[in-house]
Image (tube, rainbow, N blue to C red; front, top):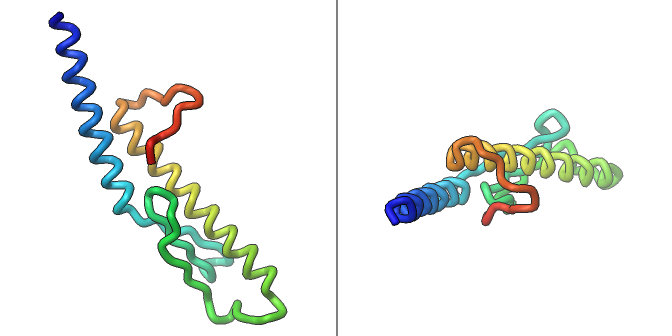
Length: 107
């Protein structure tokens, strides 16, 4: 019975740490860029878009496709940074143990 109580305490501590990480990720803002910084996309820790900044020199009607590609590239850059940060935070919580295959984070 003592082992079960110890395990329950560890689960509660893990839940508290997970909640703290979720709050930190919600407040986190990560920017990705492309075109040498001409396009910036900012996401929060949940991957939701918060801001897009585009250099005025890219505002040309005949270069719309280039601008679209740069926006996508900046978004992907920001997304990969968010995912790396999430993995780092989760490694802190789980003590470096990887999540089982197929298990997704609740963010």
